[in-house]
Image 1 (tube, one colour):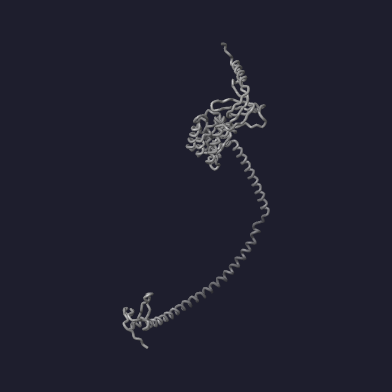
Image 2 (tube, rainbow, N blue to C red):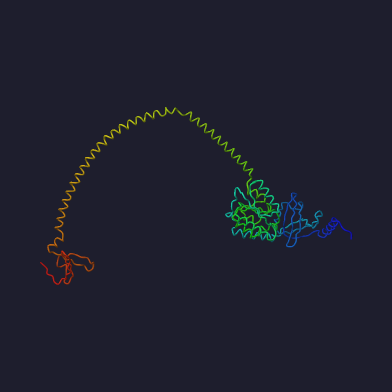
Length: 426
């Protein structure tokens, strides 16, 4: 058997395949969609076990058709061919119909709705990014081009910024666990002003690690502001919704977290020039106003002279009034002294008269006192009211009855007596 060249073998395979599959209808899930400037669409059609590259040339597309998103289930019609330069079998599409969303897309939407209902995407939990980040944490693969793009932008915009890299896998089984652990490590250090989580573009499958629930919750719990920069501008992951800021690309993220020092210098210079101009303008206006005020000013001595004369007149008036007031005050003092003496004399005389009258009244009151009567041998008879328990003086016989208990108050005490008989006086 003679050996075939690669071209010969590929050509024979091309003839066999293209003659066998002239027209096919195949269903699967869209993935890795790419649109070229020529208008041609390149994407993969896949299911659980296999993947088929596809191309849809611009001439075969319907006017105004929009490309389905990755993960969309579609039904394609076309022909199978082999592209010799790459030795690649592909499906040349001439008809595309959306059959429904694929399993990954459905899982994405289902988890998105769940997390959104829990409030993980609410704006109230978004932390503001620092205006001047001095230390930036980056969670990505150290072999990826995204890291080099971010480092280049960070060093160009802010040469003094410190970068702390937590290298992880960004796709494949278990990658989301590594990413979550890297975020938690950087956050626990507490030294990063902001953390960028990012990678380059890819298919829905390639980016699926950033849709895992555990990673989304780890990012939500992060105390450090986080910027997501996963894929290209058209790529969206759940990390984008929970992050404090979403950037279309890793390059955009680097531009977002640090300001451009050159632009800041230019802005400072512009502000300095503006402030200098404002100060110069204010100085000119002030100088002009000062000149105008100086022109309106008179000789200060001419202004002060009338007030000085007026002050002298007022001083003389005050001196005359002061002398008159002093004389009046002296007269009033003499009158007050005389009144004080008269008041003292009157008070002493009034006090003597009052003492004398008080002595007379005390003597009369002593004579009228019941105690004085008791000393002469008389007594006071009192009875007690059984209901009110109050005492009252007995002055007549009819006020008491036989066997009633009475109190007889004498000079030196009280007698308890009982009425055995009574005789009235007509």
